[in-house]
Image (cartoon, rainbow, N blue to C red; front, side):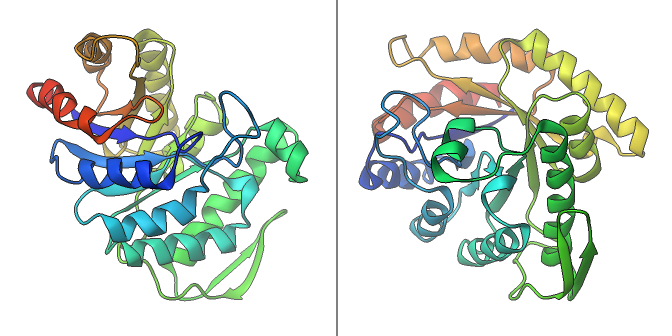
Length: 279
């Protein structure tokens, strides 16, 4: 089993986030570190601070040297796919090939209503997502891209410079939808991530993913299956092992440990000591 961490960029400071990511870079057991893509906090006062995902990633790419970095996950509704591809390529260049590309359809009604961002009905949202993923892959991997979709249209489009990772940074698709989301994972992703209520739910979704892979002729072993585990700030840190064990038994490849809000860098050494024997 492999391990990553995730920090919540809400109700916190840039200095704190930066300290944690730089500290995580020193522990080999953590292969990657993630943020999220929202403009409002998800807990507490919605008028509180929330750092923007991709600005953070560009800066943190410079602040770190080993650990892989990513956003879990970027809402397709927030940025045109061509803009997204250019951001991705730039951050991968800055990080010297350490970027994980997290993508999702988007869901936050409150943010969209407040900021004037269109949140289409679910079916259209996933249609747009499917077209957006294909357009991004084309722009990142091909010299020139033309794409004639219903929602995304590219004509002799360029994205330069290309990312360091070829043909493109590994794609993580997050979500639990058994048809559209897991179907998209089977077609395009190198990692699937889910936040599940328990290991039994996660395993049932993984079994559906295997079915979707069979439908498109994809080897499921090509896809890293990951799960988020939230660390309770009020519980003993050792409880994390009990939280992880059922997912290990269910066949999770990667556990993303969601750090408590405003966690200090000092949490990482004992956390690394706890999970290292599980690798």
